[in-house]
Every structure is written in structure tokens, then in C-alpha cells.
Length: 165
Image (cartoon, rainbow, N blue to C red; front, side, top):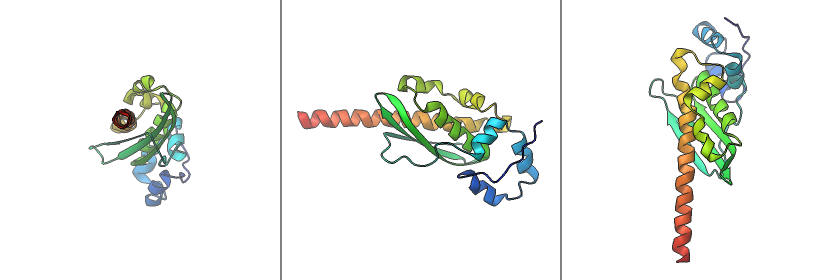
């Protein structure tokens, strides 16, 4: 098993670090079970924050542990051009949000459904068994954001037809 020297993580991870500054006990053991990719995405999450003027927003939660994730997307010409996330959760959940945004950016809407729970977990180099549900958060929140985008687009088109007619 690989051992990682964990330094205080940035941004979202800093919240968890504040509650476990010595990374001792179970935290260190859990972190050592993560792949280097997962540890990197937790320590330096990509695309963190709300996206002002987003075209779609989706949220997902995991009943098993109380983790929640929200993903914002911007779409141009049916392509996800920007994607951001916020997550209240464990290191694996934060890493899954980060990886989901990396997988979704630049992807055509017709291909977003290829970002499944399994695809997120695989891209992170795997997840420990008790953390597999974390990959559901990213994929589910992303799908919900796409559905929100589709609904908003349909509402805009309907409003345009009503105002024209």
C-alpha cells in the first residue's frame, strides 16, 4: 500500500483539514488507501465554486453519509464550456466532484451521459469499497444540471413563442 504525505489541502479540503489538523488515526489510514490521482484531486480540487449565470444547476446527495454536491454548467452550441462544483463531504466526495468537472468540460451534451459513477471512479484510479457511493454524487449532480439546462432551454423557447404569437 502506498503512503502519501498529506499537506493541508487547499480550498474545499481546508474545511476537513481544520477539523483534523494532525491527520492522525482513521483519517491517515483512509487517505493512504486512496490513489495518487484521488489524493491530488482532493488536495487541489479543480473548478471549485459557483458559476454565475449558469445555464444549468444540479444537486445530489448521499443518504449513506450526508455528503452533498452541486454542479453548475455553462453550455454553448450544445457543448459544456464551463463546469464548476461545490461539495460538502469527505475527501473522496470532493475528489469525485473535481474529476467530474474535468470529465465534463468540453463535452457535447449527447456525450455527458457517458460520465457514469463507474467512469468517475475509474478516472480517479478507483475508490475504496466504502466510498464507491461518492462517485454517484458527481455523476448524478452533473446529470441533474444537464436536465436543468434542458428544462430552462424549453422554457425560454416557450416564452419566445408566446411573446411572438
